[in-house]
Picture (cartoon, rainbow, N blue to C red):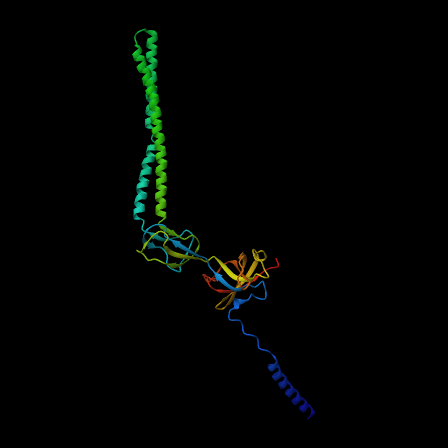
Length: 311
C-alpha cells in the first residue's frame, strides 16, 4: 500500500513539474520581417546568400533583318557556336568581288615576264654596242659617232626598261596586298552579321524573331553562363574587412527538391562599400556541376555560405 501511495505521489509531482515547466519556458522571439536587417552572429556566415549566373547580352553589330536562328531557347551552346544570322547577301556578294580582285592581283604580282623581257633587251643592246665598238676599232670610219651614240642609247633605254618593269611588278605586289586587305575587310563584314556565343552556356532568351529588322546595338539574344556560378551575400563589415575574406575558401550549401547539395568555392570580391546596416556585399565563385545532364546551380537560388577564416 505504501508503495502504491509513493508511486501516486511521484506521478502527481511529475505532472505538476511538467505544467510548471511549460509555464516557465519563455517563447522565442519571432524573426524580424527583414532578415537582412542585421548580420549573422557568426561572421563566417554571410547573410542573404543568393546564387547568380552571369548573363551575357548579345547585340547586333550591323543593320539588317534577322535571317535565321540556329538554336532554340533553353538549348546549351558551346563557345563560338553560331546562334543567329543577320541578312548577309550583300556582304557576301562584296566578299566574292573582293576575292576575285585578289586572285587577279596575285596573278599580276606573280607575273615577271616584263622584267625578264627587259633584261633580255638589255643583253641584246649591250651585244649590239659591243659589236659596233669592235667594228670601229678594226675599221675606222665604218661606224659613225651618231650610230655609236644610238647604240649606247639603246643600252640605257633597256636599263630603264628593266627599272620600269620592276617598278610595275612592285606595284602589282602592293596591289595584291591591298586586295588581300580588302578581302579581309569583306570577310569581317560577313562575320559581323553572325552572332556567335562568347562562352559555353545556355540560350536563355531570344528577343527578336526571324525577319525582324535590327540596327547596331539592338539586343537579340541572352546567354546564361552555366559552368561557373557566383554566390553573393552580406558580411558584417564591423567585424570583417575585404582583406579578411578575399581569396578565402568557402563552402556553399543549396537546397534542392530532394535534399541539399554542397559546393566548394572561393571569395573573389568583397565590396569596400558599407550600407546603413553595417553590411558589405561579397561574392564567391563556385564551379557548377550537373546532375542527370542538368546544371544544379540556377540563377536566383537561395544558398548558405560558410567562409573558412582560419586558413
